[in-house]
Length: 627
Image 1: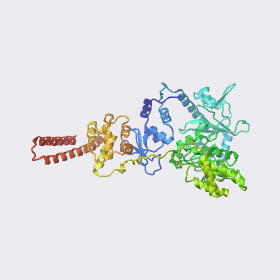
Image 2: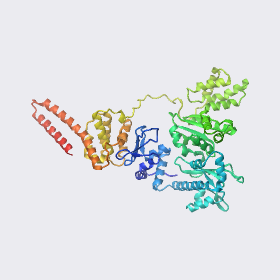
Image 3: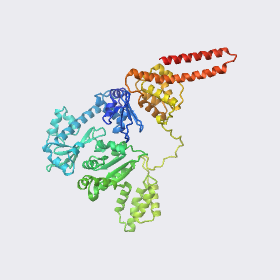
Image 4: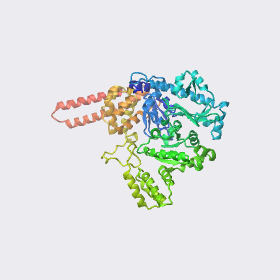
């Protein structure tokens, strides 16, 4: 198990990575002023670009939604990867060998890279084979289900040749050892050596959130194939079937954007939903939907106590599908998002439904979804004879704990009334049984709070959260504009302003209190002026409500249309000098008032001191204007 990545390596990878190249792969960036690029924000819907990137600083900021960060946070938020995964991904991109705190490169990390590379090479091989005449069974299978070549390419489908060693020979030629191929689950080992695990099958690559190929699912198509209908990659260092979801690599951004996911039961069902206009579909890989899958989805959904998201399960209406629904309901409480169930009519799964009735029928199936609680309650009632008193009583006893377990106090009374209506019983009678079930049940302690959960203890009175301060919240008077423009120059191009001028600006009086906080942060960080992490230091120095203001000052376009450094230097210095001059002018005005009040007094020493200070202020102003 690898230790923590050395901090020096994290900084080195960040420094060597051009953030504009990484973001530019996902966002179309165009020049937006000196040292800045702009594009449409990938984190929220917008028509006018407000997403700014400053390559020299290595950071991005959106003036629309407020998202801000460096190249690591960009990958974390966009691709829903962990910080370590983001670092490892960028290190691999630039060919940098990471070192971990245990003293050297992690063996598992090195092996993981080799296995992922082998899987990638295998996926490319399978995809090439799908275009050959030998892959006719796979081509026919896809065509019969309404999937053309474009769909096959979109999902990376391939064909495993009916051969004992076609893939093995190919990957050996790419430099992979038999031990590596076996560790990746691409080959099996027999008495005569290794042989291809997948033979004569249609193959789906299974990828993670970073688009790395972890393993494969392969469907039996040939009559003489005696293996299981679906054969998956075995457990490996990179493939754990209880933690992977097919299609998540394609669905992750739409899931994150819409806060909605559709969980289906098969690879072709995922393809059908995506092609029918529901790009949030994913499927488990040869195992039941479980806790580890939920952890992955909650990460992508942004599922928390304030979530307004939705998880839609689709199940076949047969006995197996009913069991799957019950298993999913057992884990439903782990979601804060709403859970629903969609079932295709006439026993059709999403793939068959699309094939027989078209894309619109698939969308209608989702639109007709029912809340998970309603689905489960009706299934419970269906197991009892409601035409008898005994049957209704038994059904009530079985259904009452389900209603009592509804976390949203606004929904619970409604389902209580519905249950009474379905059973033909009086509401007070059903309320008593539901209440008793609620008092007797044990509240789970491993679910996240949400959908109406009451706090475990009485809330502690706290001050209301302060609103974030942004440029838009500042007044637009001349004094504030000057302060804003001067700080913009100091934050963005301190090397052009110059340390001496910045020191003087850091002691100047400010009319706007929020901008004065930024000034004070600059004054506290003069020792790190313009160095590595300059912006991060300023953000960390100010109170949280002021942090968005610092971010915006760092990304607001400079008031210049040229990148000529000398021209920029003159603009930057003249702007900050105007702020300092205003401060000197205020000092002069105050000294003049003091002089007027002191005239005629019997303290000539006091008069001489004031006049000397006036002369000094005027000299400072002349020097400032001359500079």
